[in-house]
Image (tube, rainbow, N blue to C red; front, top):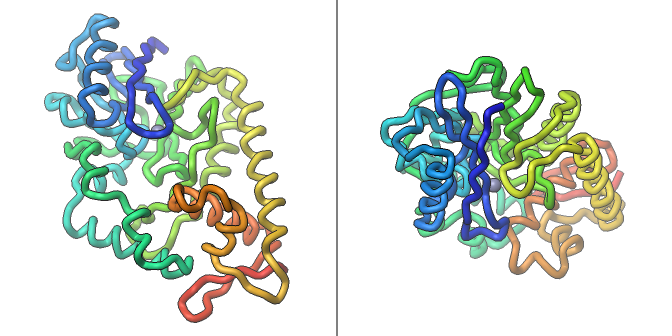
Length: 315
Ligand SMILES: [Zn+2]
C-alpha cells in the first residue's frame, strides 16, 4: 500500500491519533483527527510533508465516528466523505437522534442502578461534542465493500469499540488500516453505544470486539496500521494477548458474583475497579458490563431484571 502516516495530537488520554494518506486511483485520507487547531496544524503539515495540501484530498474515509478520528471532516469541503452509515448520526447530531441517545443512556443507567445524577458524566456534554465534525457522509460503505478508487481495498465491519467501526484490508499486500480495533499499547474500551438500528437494545460491545479481533486473526494479516501508536506486525500474537487479558479479568470478576445474592452492575464495578470508578465511571461501567456479558455468554452467570434493575447471580 502506498501509505503515509500523519501523527496528530489530541486532547484525550489516549494521546496522538494516526491519520493515513493513501494514494490509489484517488487520493484518500483515512481518519482526520479531532477538531482542534493543533490537530489541523499537524494535519496540514503532514500533508505538506507528503507534497499535498488539504484541497488535494479527494476522499476522506472514516474508521469510526469518535471525535479523535472524525473531527476535521469539516475542512474537506470538496472531498467525498465515506464511512459506515452509523457515523452520520454523530456528524448530523439531529435533535431527534440526540434525544434518543440521552434516553438510551438514561435507561441503561437505570438498569445498571447508577444514580441519575451521574448521567452527565456518561453522556458527552455539548462542549465535548464540539470536537466532532459536522459534515455528513457523502457515501455509505459497509462490510465487504471496496473503497472507491482503491481496487482490492475492502471494508470489514468490526464493531465493538464503536458501532460504526470498519477496518480496511488491502488484499494485495495483506495489510490493514485498523482504526482502534487493535492498538499496540492498550485495549480499546468496549464503549456502550446506542445500537445501529436505534432500538433500546444495548449492543454487547466486548463480545462484538472479541468477535472482531478473532475475525482479524483469521485474516493472518502482515501489518496493521493502527489508529493510535505504532504499526503492528506481530498481529496475531497481540490479538491473543488481548483475548487472554480479557479472560483474566473474567476470572477476577466471577469471584465477585455470588450464588443466591444478586448484584447490580454498579456494585460489581465498585468490586472490580475500587480505585478508578469515581474518576472513570463511564469507562469502568462499560468494561464491567462487557465482562458480565461474556460471563453470561459462557453460562457462568445469569442476569435478570428485578424492579427495573439488572442483577447478576452466579450459576
Ligand atoms: Zn481512537
